[in-house]
Length: 255
Image (cartoon, rainbow, N blue to C red; front, side):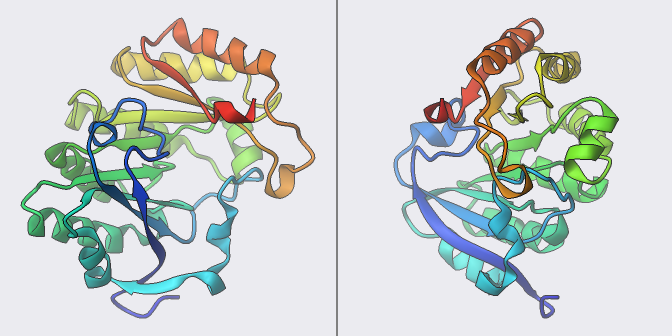
């Protein structure tokens, strides 16, 4: 859809510490300055509950080039660049080119971070992860649920590749605090059984990988559901703590 050399995106600055999913432990949260948020339109999932469904509204996006992104990133106050969306996967070749150029032009001083569902092409995912490891950035996988039937019902596609990529990224880049995961606590669908299974999977790589449980707010096609009930949140937290040492509850303000 985009002309060659362009991507559909929205670029803006967030003051540090920002509200990214890794802010409770990442390096950038302890630094002064801003993060460049690169919101990429599109997604390779079709989640019923999408919490960022503005990524579907291409008419409100900007067409940007790699040089546009780099110019915004190399300002003196910018410490981090986070590629998210939607999810970066549909425009990952563009995002990777931009990230490499930012890394080179900043002399490696910029944290390169990714927030994605994790179902990107293996070779590209590996390149992105290595860049984050070199730059002191983070790679956040959104592990939607553990059991395939629940993943398929909620996301419209089978999301097993996110688990495969997660496992491989840890083997490639085992640096502490680079790899992290989140799970959105969709009321009654993503319960303590699901979260416990996801946490057990993560712990098989390392029990010290940070894991965030995100409180759900009603959106898109699941706008008839409530905010995640407190009892479900606490049960999921306890289930995750059985396997992992570092568990966080995100979006607490919704409770």
